[in-house]
Length: 462
Image 1 (cartoon, rainbow, N blue to C red):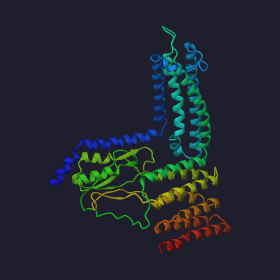
Image 2: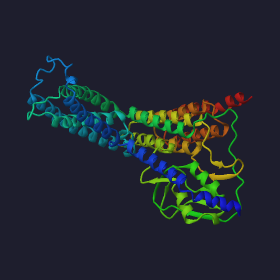
Image 3: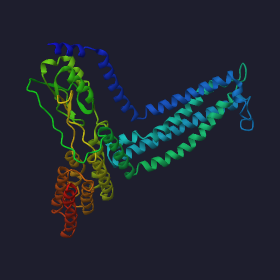
Image 4: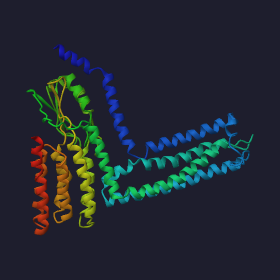
């Protein structure tokens, strides 16, 4: 009874809960905004616009600021019309170039969407070089427009010389940056650059989700004990993909309420409205208000993101590979590049300690069961579709077996090693229907080398 009163007191403290919810909302908003053309270009434009207004205002009340600029560089110190012409010309030409940049961007996004996959547009939109390009050009325009009102002929002529010189320097910077942007955009549409960027972003998610390296004798995680109590199914109130789960908050709430929480869906899964998203044991302690608090730990949206979703990064690379080996395109070299990047991601995952599924608080008291995708799931997502559609392509099939061998050579645990063996055998089983015996012998030789990793693993164990 005292424990229930304590739990009730803790649950009605609004400040920690409000702060936690606010931080989650801010995190989700920042993740969404930093992946678009809104935040960084807008901030740069506002800062440069404010700089133009402040600098021109300061020159009027501190004439010594423009005394250091020699008349050789800017001879018309007392001619407002020249300054107005320069500022207006830079502003108009900058906006013209901005329209060209937007046209190049739209063409690039359309090409990438049709040629590779619409899901890789996220990586293009998150490109910082493109965001900086838009920000600098828009900022130069805002700088000139903010400085123009300070240039006047009546009642006393005034020319903000330092401001005009700064605008001219920004114009030269824009010309240089435009050349860099054209070079950058021509490289960014290369398929090797695309899949490499996606692989790097996926590795960053792995670093965030699984920061600790796998130990030499790491034991599988054990949960429990599960309580024998009444269960309450909590259904989702929105339809969408689970993009982020605030796991520490769920553990904290489960501890305060004295319940166990079992998630029915993991990150990356689609959950329709009205479908159970979690189960709560000791259901009598969960009121409608507490149910709403538990649901607030989930970030659900219309599209998957890579906040906690390693599988989504792999799916993007697989999409590019499947387009490449389709009969309409028939580009096995691109598919091979994708397989190389997929093996890179799987090696990174296999070398890290997996995220915890069973979370306790305090120790030995199970509070939250949080499902995560495992190595077998990632392995199937990465290679199964490619294996199926590349049964008639010896080059892609050989590279699949090499990828399995590369992953096995990093010293993966025995269970994961057996999964790689099974995938290698399935490659040959599928190719037996389409490839001649000479090609099959090459595949069997590579599979034999892969299966030899089992003996090498046994020697390491000894």
